[in-house]
Image (cartoon, rainbow, N blue to C red; front, side, top):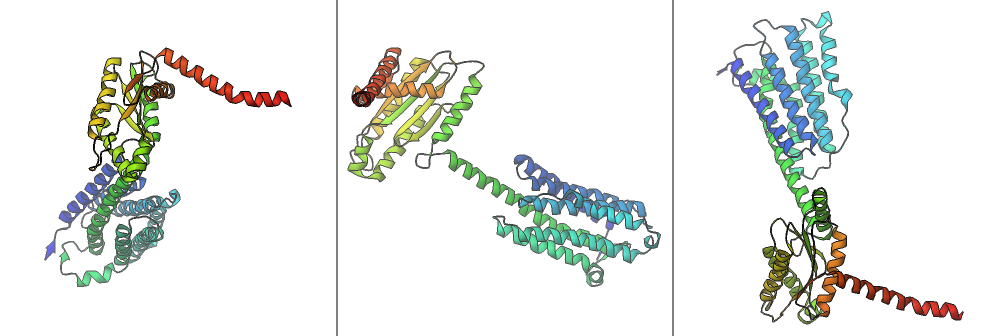
Length: 412
């Protein structure tokens, strides 16, 4: 069977270019994984080198061949650097062009101009060194995806070995190349495309798996594991971002502070498992009652909060009543137990003022306190009188606690 060199060149160029662009596309989706970009550029550089390899005629043009080899060596150096970056080690810029520079300097020696076998040996040594260095980087790496790492190590090591044995292999191959000049070189490069394709696909899948893992970790850190809504940290961060967006154009905003009534009694009477189930039911009822653009989070224990942006006072009260009523209906019976859970809600609405979530939560907490004092299972709206009364009660409590110390000090 005879293979046409030009056809093989074109196939190889297409494969390298497609792989390079595909890896760069994956990198654009997650620029944090810099190694993927390096591997993509390595494929594109290799494609350019093969284009130069294909420009020679029956008698090789040493200038184009030397430049093609220099680009080929650089591409393997870039792959090695990507392997270092992949496992968190620094790049070695000086080594990126070492092989290419060494090759170009050696090729300037007159004694090697016609020494094809010696030149082939030097080229083989350079490529083998880079491929084995890449395999070594993966071997000593500590990446999580061992299933993807070890095949890459094996294939890279095998490729370096294949370059060392390329001349003897030509004699036993079941096909021949029509142009015998540098035939073993072309066959070696082309045979590597299957390995490159496998490795690149493994890297793409690995990058995607790593991104999914990081996304799960980020989600777990920002989501309450029981209810599936934002935890306190995530809620406060989102509220701070909302405040920044509204800083230039203040908008009417409502803050709800929600607390489950007698939740400790529910835990004591029915057990913590049913208490957790009650919290899940509330989170579901609250999610269905607010808009997708509203913020909803669990601040801790049985306390929840919501920020309703761009809403009137009347609509905010309607949302709070909807949350209260829907949860009371859903929690009448939980897992065949007559729980009858309810919630108290404190609401504060600010009109055309800059959003200060901490201040609004403090005011909503005062309204929630009044809701608890006035019988629970109700919505209370913070007012100026309420805020002043709560502040006066707080100051009086502080004064009362400080009085015995003052009397004791005077007696002394």
